[in-house]
Length: 380
Image (cartoon, rainbow, N blue to C red; front, side):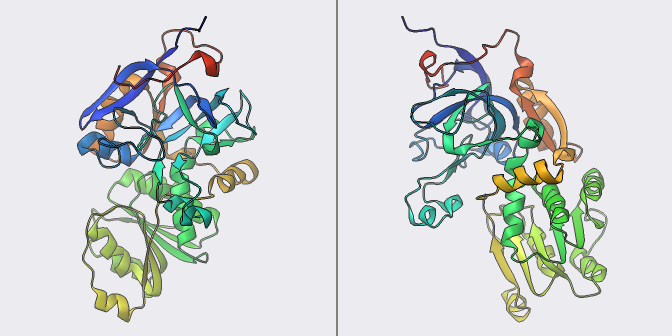
């Protein structure tokens, strides 16, 4: 006799302004997949955009090629947890392993994947945006997404590896380690860029934002200079003054606006580089100045091969990412205390984690066998 399907709570996106905490079936891990009991899932700006006026990345009309999923879809791509079940043909992982999830779908066969650049795979996507994610009690993911954690790495730290990976990849895109940088925009990724720049021995780190609380946090993470863009005009020129009139080697645009990009260009020395991390739909540039200053603009999307380095930095060098966590909430409060709070943008909240276990009002099974659960569409 087949075991009864087990149920769980999940945050399901149905449309703009319509995210429901629903009871759905616990997914069964398929071939090459593992089932994760989710410990924490962070709220990302991408989640906010999908909630506010999506769909942007969420597949609605056609299934995403990496996941086969369409909306309604379980949100959440910044997650970690414990392996609860193994699908067929999974090697190298065991039930009970604590893991960080690198939520990138990749095909493994396109030219970019074969070159090792899987973050720009032609079928690239994120679990939690293009497939079912971790804003739930359980999530089934391809086994290649799971990175086993040593005992020295807490699950709280692991919950931050996804946004920290965005920051680390952006630093790599900067080229050789610069001596001076500016970070314009101190959301979670901007703040983690500050922290990782300090970890990589950048001598001068100028942090720019309009929220005093975030500037203060940046100082604690290693920023050497703080500029309140809400109170001070001519931020680019001010950064040049701080660097003896030269400008920084690299500026990171982590806002996603034309004005922030202009600030970065004004703050960067001749021959320097601007790294675009934020997402702005369209911008106009003074290309005459760009050419005459021989400045470079490079884009940074997602990340690749970052999780092993972050695990090592936390486990061996004591890197602490957790100061960017400003609150942890239960799943049922995701919309009111998560999305709506962050969208108000007061600056006092930075990274909000969701703890799916904290809202449970019933005992949770110790483990879920692959044969005892089936996955159905979360519209039930």
